[in-house]
Amino acid sequence: METELTQLRHSAGEMPAEKLLSWCFETFGSRVAIASSFGAEDVVLIDMASRVAPDLRVFTLDTGRLHQETYEIMDEINERYGIAVEVCFPDKRRLGAMAHKHGHNLFYRDISLRQLCCKVRKMEPLKAKMSELDAWVCGLRQEQSVTRNSICKIEGDHANGLFKINPLMDWSHQDVWDYIKKHKVPYNKLHDKGFPSIGCAPCTRPVGMCEEVRAGRWWWEDPEKKECGLHAHATSK
Ligand code: SF4
Image 1 (cartoon, protein in one colour):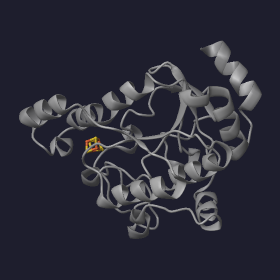
Image 2 (tube, rainbow, N blue to C red; image 1 turned 90 degrees about the vertical axis):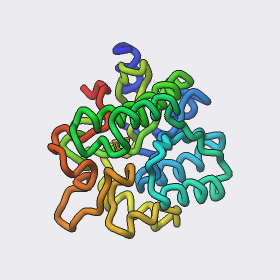
Image 3 (tube, rainbow, N blue to C red; image 1 turned 30 degrees about the horizontal axis):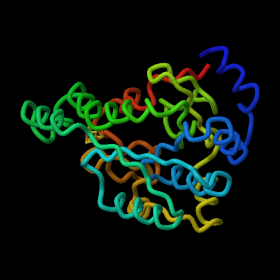
Image 4 (tube, protein in one colour; image 1 turned 180 degrees about the horizontal axis):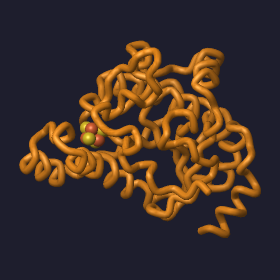
């Protein structure tokens, strides 16, 4: 994977977002998909990709604990772009066993229980989706948090055995919103209610003016550890 990663970075690692997306869909065809939690960066990627890849694939993880506003934007995106977002659900038996053993709100009690919930509701469905893909596209940006400041545009996702593409890696918050306004992209109404980062309802709160973008995610935990595991294994250097 390292040799191929070096070659891919040589070909496309410096491309601006739209060109990188175009290259990505040409290179990987139906074996690449945009991962969306329907935050601002994700709708930018979907809008941009719809201009260069009419057959784009988008998938999302429906953890069963999302906000109503997130389901609304999901429907709106399907309608606007004429796509059918691929929805990945957790395994019902795993959910049942977890709730039976630890309760429905286990995430607040202990970091290991929070990670268990993320594993069952996000990581395991993601792993199943990854088996269909050679690469996935994410809306990660370096300035979002301390856990993301070393990401690259093209990374090796060794845990899943595929490549991860971050076209908006060097975009600012302002760049994202300028694009949304310029292209009249539909966006998640949670952003108007003080949520800069979109996640599950019990684990995401609005943030104040001076707080960092992801401060509202698992706000009771140490900032150095605030990832759900989806973006924890890529090779960025
Ligand atoms: Fe569970 Fe919260 Fe993780 Fe969602 S973000 S999967 S509710 S722990």
